[in-house]
Length: 475
Image 1 (cartoon, rainbow, N blue to C red):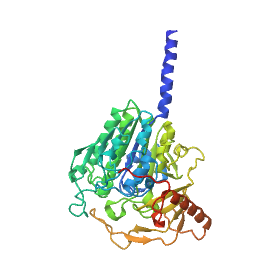
Image 2 (cartoon, helix red, strand yellow):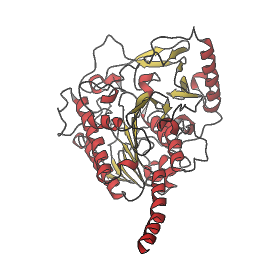
Image 3 (cartoon, one colour):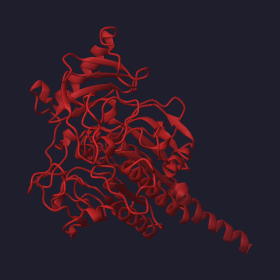
Image 4 (tube, rainbow, N blue to C red):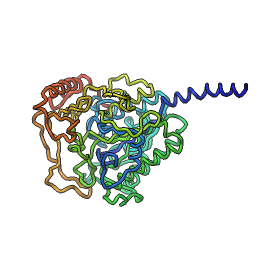
């Protein structure tokens, strides 16, 4: 009888805990910088290997039509962490060291969403949403922070910087400067240091749900690699750096496995935009996609997406259903049953797509792609098939010049779209055949969507600098 009662009592305490664990996964987001669509093995990388990232994909789900909201650093990170188009909340482009604005305190980040459910939270690596103290991660839901406040090329050693253009690049811990000057030698162990911090956070919080946002500085130029990977790829510095980042992913996954956390941890791996093509041998590859970072062609916004959560996401699967980083926050909120921000966001719950549910469809009517100073440059149908490139000027690399070497870029050529161009991304991922003349109905549909988002967020190309739904950045 005593044994029977003990079993009953044990079930009372164990079953609810198991139920809670299933609804509160640990969450790890690994966000690369300037990594191209084809820079990892399972997305077509050539010449070097990324076995740990490939293993992550094999044990989870590949997203071959996964996009960022804007093809540039700060704006892209804004979209991921807030679920908003960045121009909705006043963030454009890449914030420099002298910027006096950043993410507004009234906006909610993923960290603040998961805090509702008692998560421990940490940001490690590149932040780039404001370097002033009130804009740092610890003011936006993160319990701790270790990293650099903006891009690793915003420093005095930039090959094209005029003397005095940039201040020293600091290393920040929580809300204070840990090291006021990062040197080139320091950059060689940034990936190692970030990884160690991530591992330490996981081990410290293994007894409760946690959210780790690991935002690597690599493979953004300038490229640096530790001695343990220098020359290892045999394909040059870029391959070496990718192999070291792959090692970092392996360290994070090994830590989860060692601590019995792998089955109930949702890992999301992606990049903030496509490759910075003007850097040639120091840039990655967009594979079959057109153009790269700094454009709203597929090479600028379509990035490698991988998600793994053994308890809930089917292993070894691939989807070409479209998603955008703005959808990550509301999807996480849905899974853990947290309240969404009271302020309007743009992302929608895409859990059926993530979970591989039969006939899962994207819930958006369309996605808008802005760039530069609030320019609406492209509109894509929610299913990811039709894309309308609106008239605008974009940067393109001339094909008749040698590829850049040694970490110094070549110059882009401004290229103008005079009339809207329509592409069927189901059959033409390279955006090579303009079908606007043959599909006037699709053009008209996307033009209507463009009118809707212009009214809400503005469009400087149409002399509409502000819309009815924009909010101010923090200042």
